[in-house]
Image (cartoon, rainbow, N blue to C red; front, side, top):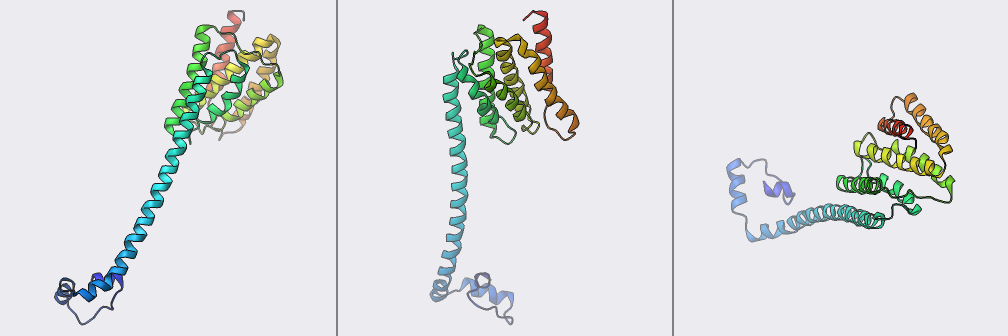
Length: 222
């Protein structure tokens, strides 16, 4: 039967099961030698398949580890840099790491880094960044809203985008309270698109966070 499987000899239709069993158990040295190349080929092919699979798994894990180290470096940079305008450039790259299709370990770490940065700045009442190029800040706000549409419904991504967007709103209004009208326009445009597109995966938390902040800011006279 083994010989048939490996195609080392033609089956004998006149042999019964007992003879077949006897042939397998009484194979001579010459027959065993004939099987050797076929067995070697089979094991070699299996080894190649296993090796390629391991290489893919190792490569994937190396990418995850690399991204994790980059996030660690960003966390170190963001620490105590709350008022540095350069921190605004970090927002979008970190948000992209929280998408639904991202590695869970990476997404959780990116979300935690962003939350820690924003919460700690608020708690310490650190001054907001004051970038010189305000147009870049407007572009960033719109870019975050575009990113919010790409999270495929992931809560971690939606919450991170909402918080990052609100941080940029605070920066814009900190520069000039008159920017509030423009901010409302950006949110309104995003909400109109969301309302019109029934398949949109953008989460409403983007709008509710802004509305809640607007109410509190108005009451506190900010």
